Amino acid sequence: MKLSNYLIATLKEAPSDAETKSHQLMVRAGMIRKIAAGVYNFLPTGLRVFRKVENIIRDEMNKAGAIEVMMPFVTPADLWEKSGRWDIYGKELLRFKDRADRDFCLGPTHEEVVTDMVDREVKSYKNLPITIYQIQPKFRDEIRPRFGVMRAREFTMKDAYSFDVNELEAEKSYIKMFNAYKRIFERCGLTFKAVEADSGNIGGSFSHEFMVLAETGEDLVLSCNTCEFAANVETTGIKDVSIARNDKDFEPLAEVSTPKMTSVEEVSSFMNVSSEDIVKTLFLESDEELIAVLVRGDHELSLTKLKKFLGSDFLDLADNKVLKENNIVKGFCGPIGVNFKIYSDNSIKDLTNFITGANKDDYHCQGVNYDRDFLVESFGDFREAFDGDSCPIEGCTGSLESTRGIEVGHVFKLGTKYSESMNAKFTNQDGKEKNYYMGCYGIGVGRVVAAAVEQNNDENGIKFPTALAPFQVVIIPTEKTKGPALSKAEEIYDYLTNSSFEVALDDRQESPGVKFKDSELIGIPFQIRIGPKSLAKGVVELKNRLTGDILEFDQNDYDGIREKLNELF
Ligand code: ATP
Ligand code: MG
Image (tube, helix red, strand yellow):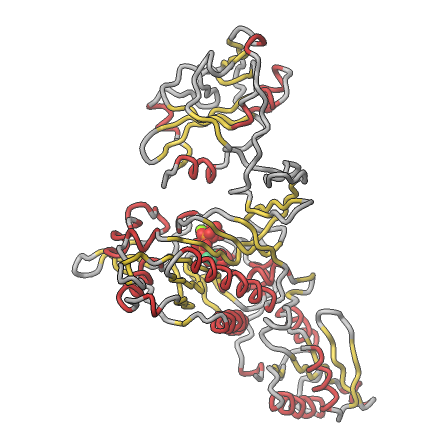
């Protein structure tokens, strides 16, 4: 590619809404441009990197025996009604009507479409197992699109779906995909970790996320310092280590005036107690009812764990309007005298004489004890784990350490969730109709690109792993007008292009400084620098962007340059 005929589109400044390094660098390097919140153009340099990731994914999917198809972006509501997700998917699902008033949505994921497709085409156990995949756009009307293409609204996903005759076979398909994912992220040059995860909206019984480790990652990962355990904080379990309380220790219940003190910190310093002696009461709306949840003052509620415990599709903090309608006093919430079911985290089991809100403006209660002062519907593991918690694995005495991660891939065991709800069946060996056992497997292609940038950069720009770089080599003649440096550059360009390297020739009418800067910003791993001074010495220079090393070659030693590059790739 001759850069004089290319759209380089680099920028000196990043847009003000770019919070992460990868977002800033991808815009500055001329890879992406926003056209609406969470909706992006991929410019030529961005697309080149995107294609590299896509090709690695496609290659590994094919090697793992998955078969490529392409399903539509626009999907009809009746499929979603069949699975029951039309009503429960929430606002991320962009619904619309066609001219005949029929309901459609933009596919946020394709379990429904693929289950319907396989059900129509695959009738017998003889045609199973089968794993289908596509690399195709998705739309999710994310509440907070951010970080560029990392959390976009329209994005490209590789989504694969396995269909098997039984659970054991489905497990084999899952492991195949799990291993393919490991190879994909290794080939992309990423530092990552596979961790246990929640199944969220997709459903199913079991899942792993592939996390690219990066400080700006939106996910918190907890890993054991002793055993192999690693999980997303959303699902990390906590061992119940409570011991029995003694009701002889109970003190009388009393109200305490705590004017304007609505936070745990304020109450603990005013009452001179630790935050562990305070119990927070949270009110939540679930599918059917309003509930109260208790967690210790020094803990955070895990909505994901509670949702799973309750088996509810919807669970969120009640808003101010709902609190008011139910006479709940915000900032002074407590469990005493409340008519809703109260769920309590296990850590409260052995607490006596704690402090809660009094459900009355400017008052808290002290000497509070469950059973005597209020009843608990169920105790459970409802709090988020954090650094230093003990490992949840039975028999392991290790403790958990946290790191941040970017979820680039997710593999799920679905079981018969979709085949049952959509009545999708095959005929087994005994001639009986059975539901398929399914798995689903997603990778965000653009998110992988962004994660690679997030993990590989320095003050000059992106340091692409060689497998993802938009070009492998850039040749930079350091003279502006046509002269010996440009002629030499063109010769080497032709030679390396014919040797199957992806080469850029920076023949733009720009100063050498601009060319060097752009090449570093874009993250091309190798520069061949050709200037009047080096030519006078009879040499050209090869600079390695990743190590900073500069090697000199005889100006006519094209084979030597080629061999060196072959060695480096
Ligand atoms: P997240 O928790 O980040 O919203 P998710 O669990 O909803 O992700 P999945 O439904 O598992 O994501 O989707 C599969 C993959 O698609 C993810 O691992 C991620 O790489 C990618 N992905 C999901 N949402 C987005 C998005 N808004 N923008 C870009 N990529 C996305
Ligand atoms: Mg999501």
